[in-house]
Picture 1 (tube, helix red, strand yellow):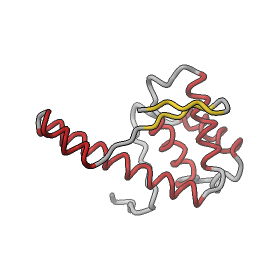
Picture 2: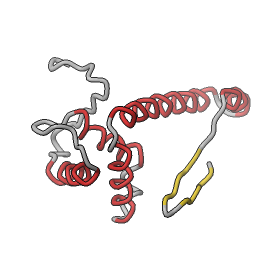
Picture 3: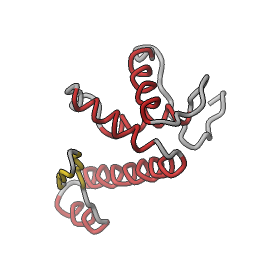
Picture 4: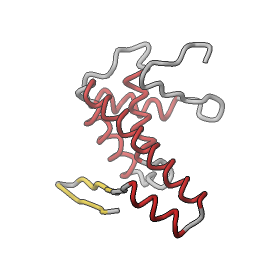
Amino acid sequence: FVDVFWRGFAFRTAIRLPQEISATEEFVSIQQGKDLQREQVEKATHLNAIRGLHAFYSVYGTTTRLAKFWIHSQMLSGFINDQTVELLVAYLFTSPEPFSPPNSHIIGFIRFLNLLSTFQWATDPLIVDIHNELTVDQ
């Protein structure tokens, strides 16, 4: 991976190629190669879903950056990774009831903090339905 620092923001980039997976399978066990392939597919799926949200909601990106900045400033990065923060913010936009989706990054950030502080994490699962495909029965 490569860490890029630009105008006060830090980005971590990892580039993987299908050929890398093939080469890895030759040197490590098949299970580790399958795990690497599954991780690559999951990350690509996550990236495409987040990219779609970012295109549909104009303030999703700035809300996510603000939430990530807050998580890092509170030294919670070791407990909550970037993908989790992206999904938590996605939940605010895809399931905003009783409100409408946030129309400002400040409102989105306040709702993010509210979600962190009021959700019953110990007893209830948080299901993020990005494509609104789940029914009540599911």
